[in-house]
Amino acid sequence: MPDDPESTKPRTRDAGATQARILAAAKIEFAEAGLGGARVDAIAARAKANKRMIYHYFGSKEALFQHVLEAAYLDIRTAEQALDLDGLPPAAALERLARFTWGYYLKNPEFITLVNSENLHRARHVEGSEVIRAISRKFVAMTESLLARGVAEGVFRPGLDPVQLNITIAAIGYYYLTNRFTGAIVFERDLMAPQALEARLAFNIETEMRLVCRPDMLPQDP
Amino acid sequence: MPDDPESTKPRTRDAGATQARILAAAKIEFAEAGLGGARVDAIAARAKANKRMIYHYFGSKEALFQHVLEAAYLDIRTAEQALDLDGLPPAAALERLARFTWGYYLKNPEFITLVNSENLHRARHVEGSEVIRAISRKFVAMTESLLARGVAEGVFRPGLDPVQLNITIAAIGYYYLTNRFTGAIVFERDLMAPQALEARLAFNIETEMRLVCRPDMLPQDP
DNA sequence: TGGCTTAGTAACCAATTGGTGCATTAAATC
DNA sequence: GATTTAATGCACCAATTGGTTACTAAGCCA
Image (cartoon, rainbow over all chains, first blue to last red; front, side):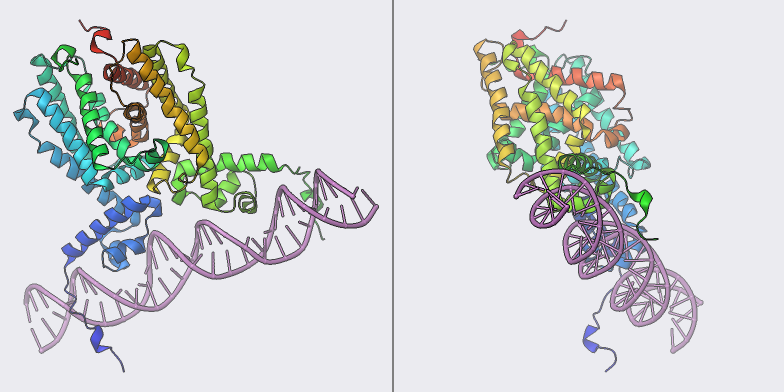
């Protein structure tokens, strides 16, 4: 009995779809296990593709990782640009940016783990990416102009470094989420309970407002 | 020619020293490569010990990781307790805590990577550690009483959650350092230059002061 | 219809990895 | 000095892993 007839799956050939499936599967696997812990076989299985296809399309595990990272950065930076901060008063724009950042991390937990993994490897994979450099410039320019506008309107403190601000906005959300497991033990608290998440967001917005706004423009405490 | 006579190194047997060497080597290796990327052989080589010794003393790679983590947490929390914040005015005490946290991360970069790795594994290894829970309680109690004292003396805002404050203090230093590699690319800046580090510390202290102190107790801007 | 390119598959490989069995040797105890 | 116990070293698995060779077959175009 040569040739099993029932194994004749009508497998359609679709290069683009296979690549997309591999990329999506790789994102999950890399996020869950890190670059070192991720298994190429696992990615292939998750993508319902043959392992050989991964090497066919991406060349190596590391090159695949690079692709995944670039896509991830592109995604968050694109979403940020769509916030249209210019259309809002400075303080409201800052709050929108803060809420967006928090929300993005919450909805895309893989982003955080991917970035962590990339930093463990000293940013070796994004180092050469001109795409990432380009979108990053627009990202910094965004907060730069927001700060300038706030200062001009007299609501923000002058002299703030947009880079430091960006880092801080990211930090107070990112750290909370990436370290939520050890955090739950250290602080003996469920950090992911809905009201805990709400409380953290509120606390972060408060932190940012106090940092950026002129004291006399802040809602006064009793 | 049985028994090579020149291989008779007067190797002294010292269980404690060997264990310590293994632990130190493991800390470095785990910090550099993460739990998954760390190689037991590499740890043995770095410790100038035989791989067999690792299993003799620690049982498994994961148990060794657990040991390393526990020691790391014990170290930072012990150093914190030695800060003697009670002997300082509240604002000065807060600044000392901020400076310490930043300095500790800078001097002990392995701590950050270890914690990252542990969170990638959902805190599985510290979960059962009663030691960590115990010292963590004292850690939270420390800022709790600092906040209370500051409020009582009229310099701190009332109602602040000590856990949120602790998380924020850690976050704004930790994130900057752990993501310094991708950060250098995104922000096109050497984040580890001495003056960059100084600037970040100053920015962080400012952030914390504005968050915690009553606005009228803050040094006024022009 | 037949041939050519390329998507897709399966089996395989060499190197690596966490982990052990067992013999050996140094210190502690008697 | 003999005996016991714990520390050390070497050689060696069994399983896994990133990557590859050799092959099949789908879709396109002449």
